[in-house]
Length: 622
Image 1: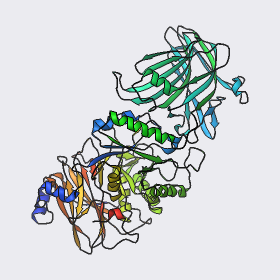
Image 2 (image 1 turned 90 degrees about the vertical axis):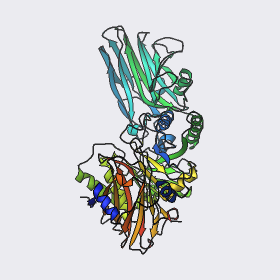
Image 3 (image 1 turned 135 degrees about the vertical axis):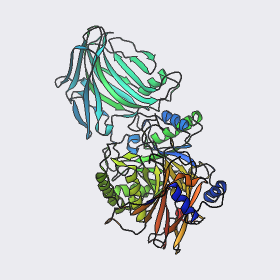
Image 4 (image 1 turned 30 degrees about the horizontal axis):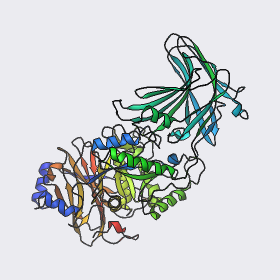
């Protein structure tokens, strides 16, 4: 069970009485002076940041265009691109599929095909034919025969859709070529074979609706290449002779550019790949497919990062309100992925030839050391995993939280600087348990900057989706150096931008800002909790915890909390006396009238002595 205890809840009348008794102070200063004393020259408005975003190099259907459109609509100042490293590099991705069965191993990666049927079919067949192969694949006999006959005039189809371990069949279309061998046995304009590539989602543009763009390649016996377009669908007729093997070669990004020249064709991924036989008017469509090849020209490890930088520059002109920075999610390490924020982002080396995580914990430590050696900051991502299952029962959440806390403490969060805390729900664990894990770290003098993220892969509904948190930085500007400085110092807060637009900050003894680690022998110290635009009818939860270095043997947060009505912040701040006869940390949570957490501060640490590991330079009060 959790060790959190509810010490007391202050209602409005109790808060007024406490203030009158001198136990709490709203202070004599007006809000403007309080803010000035707190921010110490920081930007007048904190910088809002979307810190964990995936576009067309990762496994979702998002695009840079879609995310930038959402960031602009949501009023977000800064967007960090954090594509998965191995996905950008297509490390270990299968490039040649022999199609000798519904499932096969391709360079150690499981590749499979799933059958689909559409419309009303009089007959259909998916036959994995071990006796037939294209001349180019004679050494690995086998192919797939697709046949379909519709039961009426309307089109009906049988298809097979590609899938692979860890969705590695999904990949960027930039500079990509797809080849497949096809034997059209029976085709015509009303009975044909198809290769369909569905591509990434984009917002409404050029009088076209929002949606995924689709490319359909048709083999119907015609001997000339032709193209047609309708809305988000492009169709290319490919020449291929019946009764013989043909090699089809397509470049989807080039076709996107031809069909929709207003789009950035490099900002697209192959989301699905299907092969099919389509019948109309009861005509038979029949043929074989074999030897699928997906390739692109040889390139350096950092080529995709350079292309991303070019896209960022181009999109900056279309979305000028949003500042973009390159980051990277280093993903093939245990126990968790690590986001890299910094000036010198490069593609790391991969120890494992397959696109699977290296189980050696030393690999994760080495990644963080590499990030630090390049002057960057490392984030310990989604500590309870990448999945989105239903939440566990409370006891199960507490058990999992304790187990993860032991792992985090064992290697000191791999040496990371940042911990992703702000997930409304992730890995079956709610936001409270995410925060409690963070408190366990704070209790053990593990000084981690908490952030709130969305880890969004779609770019379609930033404000409305459940995981929509952003992070606000008290930074002098949107420049990269200023943002990194704020993140390293814990000068950030995070929350739900759809429900909170205020400012959260802490100030210790009038001088030490939020995120700082201070030492004093005083028995009582004052933490000024600053909050603007508080939710009506909400509460501010003041969380206090001991810093007793309990370690892995006691992986509990060790916190108590006090709920105060947001009405107490009518002047923008409340001074909180803190008993520091023993070392403490303090942070606050802003909750709306339903109890939902909409914003969280970072902690301040009120220690009596300098910890054995010292105080990180960015967290020393100046």
